[in-house]
Length: 272
Image (cartoon, rainbow, N blue to C red):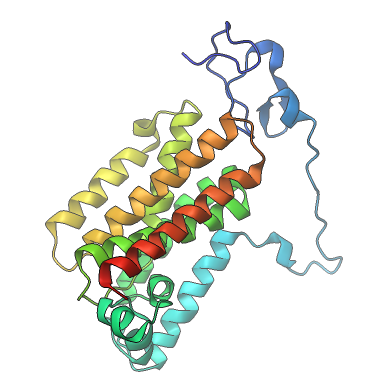
């Protein structure tokens, strides 16, 4: 049983809805978004008013929606550049897919990011975007936009590193690494808040997806495993930064360090 961070002798099953630190009844402050610790309860929530005419304000767009939109736009670009709705191909695929020799000999390091915004067909992008939509809408409100985006890119870069380590000569595309990273971080976040990961379906989803990853051909094992591991690691960094009562940006810096390490590792394994 966790103990209150302000009263170490008091056991509690409640955590602050903002920073996830355990709090006892004396430290709980009811707010519209759940129980908060004394420090977080003093933080004021910013209210953003929409335009008078009823139009859509850009401040209402979540990072999840923006990332999905970028994936969809580039998929349309793939189709326009000669790709097929049923399989990978086209000019964009050739120029942006993750491919070890292109990094080693042509120093096209951008492929470690661009690959995660391309897909090998309609079913591929449809499943990945649905996955990101579901997990993103659960996770982004808990992490905030900045941390969520940092997690997303750290996960896809960890996925790229694992692909270059295990499958350097295979052309790889897809947001699966980033999606698995979101899932890994969601599991860490749920456990830190005392939520049963079996009851939420997070752990069963992970096990089912890994079963498909290893049992069916044509699926990037490196991308899935690397992305998931990256998400777990970044989630733990966020958790420890909050428990140590460090500034919010400290966790984000930790995610950036993980991302940079993945890039350096990926370049090193292919000798680029």
